[in-house]
Amino acid sequence: MRRYDGTDNTYLEITLFQNQFQLGTNDALYSDGDRYTPAVTAVKNLRGFLPSMRSVLVLGAGLCSMVHVMRRKNTDPYFTLVEKDKVVLEWAMELLDPLKPEKTQPVCADAEAFMQTNAAKYDFVFLDIFKGRVVPSFVCTGSFLEQCRVSLAPGGHLAFNYIVNDAEEWEQVKNTFTTIFPQNKIIASSVNRILIGSC
Image (cartoon, rainbow, N blue to C red; front, side, top):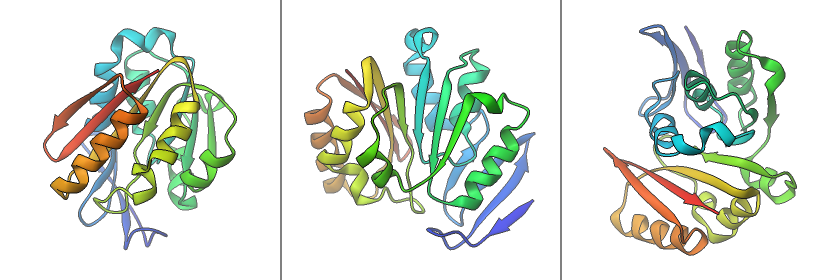
């Protein structure tokens, strides 16, 4: 439907597949409506907490699959959607128009810079930041994950979508995540790992 040479990706395109909008690159799928597996997996594993979620921060908004997944589960929190790519954010908000735009705050910003100045607290933080199939290195650092933890409200939860490209790096990511979130679980889904941490 649309194509664009993105700021961080060689190219991005929106396609309509089985009545869901998908956002992808040459080698990665960033959004898949309410079927996006990382978002579905995170929500499924936090289903007991969904009724109490009032605020959600999505870092790496894509086409807002997390919004679609949560609303399909009849959960209607206020979403702060952080996306570095202005065009992608514009597409996302355009596609969300029928879905209560007054309950979403789009923020065009780099996630690292956003978290350095963020003072708000959220019931749920979803990390879904990629360049192609690689998670940028800053996302995996203790300092960034600690900033995310501090941004959680009491009893809050964080889900981190990670793709394993290197076994040694993956072990380091797990160790860092466990240090910041001693209460955690990891769900495997093909090459993806969904790391869930709780306060």
